[in-house]
Length: 360
Picture 1 (spheres, rainbow, N blue to C red):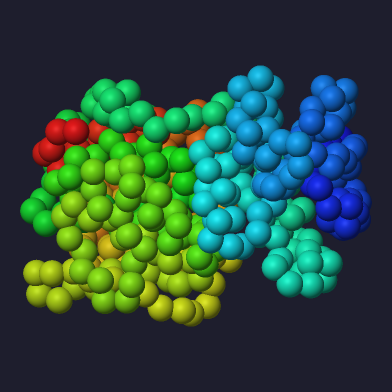
Picture 2: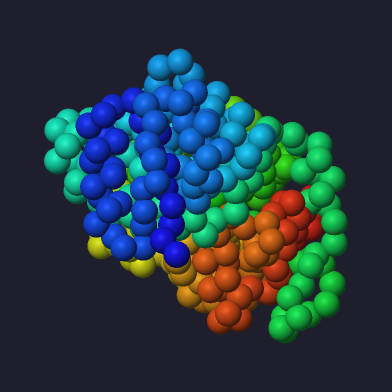
C-alpha cells in the first residue's frame, strides 16, 4: 500500500508542486490538500492520512497551533515545510518540540524550481515519516528527566562490558550523535545535566543556520552552556559544542587540552556534519577517556565510529528502539556490537552522570 499524504499549505502553487513531486513515486499517494489547518482538520478525519506535510505560516490558524492540537488529539507523522530564515529556524525548532518528525527547507528564491530540486529529499522524508512513531506534544521538564535518568544502566543481552557502573577517567569527553528525532532527544538529555557536566561535543544532522538557532535554544534551557562550534574552540567541562550545519567537526588534542576542528570536506554517509567523523576523531584522540552516545536517527551514520570508540576503550551507549523516533542509527550500532549499553532516552543522561561520577 502506498503512503497516503495530506498536504497543508496556503500556497496553491506549493500544493500543486508537492502533489506532482509525490505523484512521481508509486510508493506515495496524495489523498488530499488543504489551504489552512481549519480546512485540513475535517480532511484528516475523513481521509486518515499516513503523513501530513505542514506549512508554518497560514491563515485562520498558524501551523504551530494546529500541530500542538493535532498531536494532543490525533497524533500522526508530520513533516514541516519551512522557510530558511532566522524566524523560520525558530519556528521549525518549535515544531519539532511539538512532535513533528522532520522538516524540509522551503526555497527562498525561485520557489517552483527550488522545490523541484528538493524532490528526492521530500519523497525520502515522507517515507521516513511514515515509519516514524508519532509522539504527543512535549514540554521541557527537568525534574522528571533527572529522576528518570538516575535509574540503573540497562545493558543489552549481547553486551560484553564488565558488570557495574560505567567509570570515568579524568578529563573525560562525551560525544553524542543524532539525526531524525534528535533535536528533542538532545534537549531531554542535555537539560538533565548539571552545570559541571563533562565536556560534550555533538553532531546533529541539521542544515546550515539551523544549528545556530538550535544551540541558542538549548543554551536557554540547559544548565550547561551550549553553542554552535567554531574552528579552534576549546572543549571544556560544562560546555556543549554543536557541529555547525554543512561542516564536519573533529576533535583535536594538544598536550592535555582538546579543541575542535570545524571544516568542510566530502559528505560522509551522505552527511556533513557526520557523526562517524566526530566519533572516529574521539577514538583517536581521547580513547578510554571518552563516552559515546548514539541517539535516534535514520541510516547508519555513527555506528562504525561508535565501534571505533569502543575498541579504543571508550564507553558506548545506544538509545533503545522503544524511545527512538527512528531506530536506524542506534540500531546499526547495536547490530555490529558497538553499543556497550542500550538505554531508554530518559536514562541516557543518568548513564553519562554515572560515568562522570556526578549527580544531576
